[in-house]
Length: 214
Length: 99
Image 1: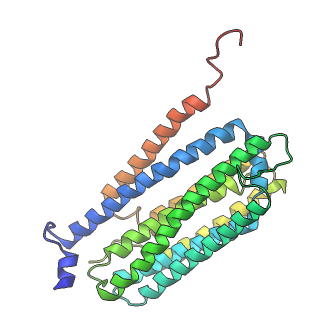
Image 2: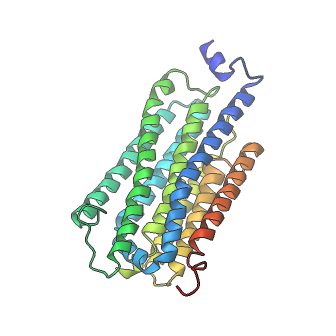
Image 3: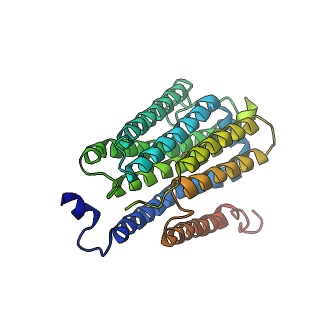
């Protein structure tokens, strides 16, 4: 009975209508999130247009290998998230393990990311805290690093929220998620993939433009 | 009630495709292509985003209304970027004469 009420609440005519309403709401939320990140990407585009050489120099200070590995790590977490969604929609209990795996891979990403932050800190690349750069455009390079920390930091916060959501989902996953009702897994999966999309662009604009200068 | 979703085969192919594109963009990043470096990187990232949105987020075959929301969001984002650019790209054009 409890499953019935979750799969079809009284305000909906059919389970399909209920699921589509939830999905549509999630997409509208994702678009607002895209606007939030979009503002930071607009700032990056503007300053990159003004100071291309300084931004390329800043980019050359990135740890390309760690960035590439982290991109692959996050893509793998999207893969396991999709598998969790796939098996949850079919009522296969193994989806729980894929949720756990997704959260663990997400933690691995954050671990690598914060290791990178620490390396930048040791390298005096933290804006406002003894930032040092030997180039004549050190202030513009500092601006690059400011955007880097803000944008990747905002992304990391979103990923952390995603990890918490995935872990919180383990409880309902064990109680009432089955082939009749897996909408929460579907929507968290949408969020997780969106965070992946943001990272793909962050990797492209921060790590790759100056990689050849190393 | 199943959610309209990608087949297992498509999920695996998309995953491998995304990894291959990451390797490709990383290797191209090592070449000195001048200002094209960031352009190529963003183009490859856009292809990756299309794969994630289309297959992993089911945008290609899910509800039509979701596609309307996505396209509307992209158009609105481009409007905001364009209007912002009109400021950043034209600063200095309107300086008083003699300065």
